[in-house]
Amino acid sequence: MKKTLSLMLVLAMLACSSAVLTSCSSSPQKSSTSPAPSSSAYSESAFANLEAVTWRFSTQSGSQTVVGKMANWIADEVATRTDGKFTIEVYTDAILYSDRECIEALAAGSIEAGQGSYGTLSKFADYCNVVSLPYLASSWEELNALCFGDDFAGARELLSDSIQAVGLHPLSFYSTGLRNFSNNVRPVNTMADMAGLKVRVQQNDVYIDTFNALGAYPVPMAASEVLVSLQQGTIDAEENPLDFIYNDGFYEFQQYITRTNHIATFSGYYVSQKAWDALPEEFQEVYTAVTTEACQKIMQQTQEDEEHYRQVLTDAGCEVIDMSEEALAEMQTTCKETVWPKYADKYAEFLAYFE
Image (tube, rainbow, N blue to C red):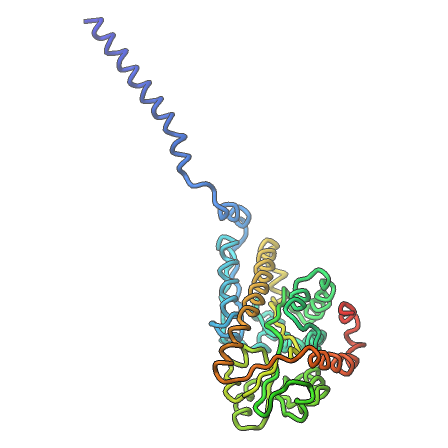
């Protein structure tokens, strides 16, 4: 009987030992199936001690445009990279402000962030008007170099200083393309063909001087008046990137579109200096990186879209004309010899980067 009890005790002890060993051997298997720490876990540790921040972002661009979609991408990306600690409410379609109103609100600290054209910005930060000079850049390669290239870092710094002087913190800027000349009178193959054509231009001295130099008759006019003026024949022509000519309906009253590439259109991202100074450095780094990527994406998408818009304009019955190298060279030389000298003293430091 004692032997039987001893044997049972030994068997029980062996069973317990086996259970313990089994339990220990199963632990590594369980941990190996657990998900590895994600990048968000590391992000959380970087932002965990920061208070949550919410900004409002305004743009007059439509929600379905490249710029409008990119505004929402920025908001999503910033939230993701900060583990949800930095969120942005996006207002497109001028729901909050027009371009001009947005700049005024940013300067006053009434809103935190926005996007808008350098044409409008130059009304406040006059130095930004330098990028409107004709043939400052005449290809996508040159535009990318100006916006992101190391050789033009000093030129961009000059623009930034001008913007900061009016209470805004500037971030990256981008180009939405080169402007083209459209009209409903005759094909424009050379500068001489522009003679006397009444062309709507922005209410900007550089634009007025440019078309005077090219022989046209510039008519300063608000953008909201262009379509009706074309329809009524008040003006013969207008000038814009191809996507604007199509999306704004100008092509319906314009038979001829000439790829003059005379002026580049620029826009950028800005922040209220007051809001920027209050933002933790960790969030500043994320927002700076994301908006720079957004600028690059916008330019890439806009460049890819050019051929699409060229085709839809052709399909709509417009004649899209490519000027010869000689004709373009004549326009470039004329503008640089007659328009640039008027602004040479004012923008000398910036223009030195283009010599």
